[in-house]
Structure formats: C-alpha cells, structure tokens
Image (cartoon, rainbow, N blue to C red):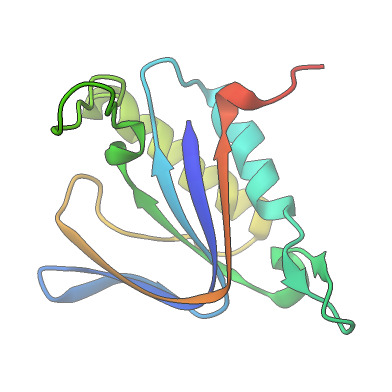
Length: 152
C-alpha cells in the first residue's frame, strides 16, 4: 500500500461537476493498493497518517498531528501510484490491485481513519474520473509505502 500525503489548507474532489469530498486544513491522501496488501497494511498506514506530526506549533516547528489542529482527511484512490515505468514510455499498472481486491481495502482504510480521528473521512469515488483541487501548505508532501516499514 502506497500513500502520498499532502498537507493542505484546503482540498476537494469533484466527479461529473459535483463535489464528492472537501476539507479545510488537513491531509489530502492519494492511496494506491496492490495485490499483496492486507488489513494489517491498512491499520499500520492509518496509524502513521493520523499520528504524523507535520503541522506547525506556536514556534513554527512541525510538532502537531492532525488531531491537534482538528484537521480533516480527503482520501483518494489512485492505482497509478503503482505505475511501472522501466520499459518504454507507457506505464504498466500490473502491480495495482484489481477493484475486487482494492475496494474492500479502500473501504477499510476509510473506516480505520474515521475510527482514529473520530471524524468523517472525505473521499472521491473509487474508479471515477476525479478532479482534485488543493491548496498545498508548505508544501509538505510525504510518501509512505507499507512494504518499507520496519516490522520489529
């Protein structure tokens, strides 16, 4: 499971001209799911996202987490995070999980984030042609992959 986490002042997702999810300050999370991903990956990544301290404190240092600023999360499914680009100019997406595997894990991630934050997680629509608008804050962008975690 791979996530690109962007600290934002605001973000929203539009599908066919209608806003499906919107937040003020918080995280825009682009989430890629591959076949090898499990519920354990969901739980680990949700904890890391919600606990990440990248928001400024009174001294301007990145010491505050999402809960400290009452921030929101806009979660967007993005299979292209698993693009393979070694050969040619056309990316391959073979590592990305098919919808029958990815949708349940995506839904688990929504539930895990909501459980950890106590707030509704805003979303796009899985598999839709989404338009994402954001005001990046910093910018602060963190890339995480559950395959890179230390299991000790």
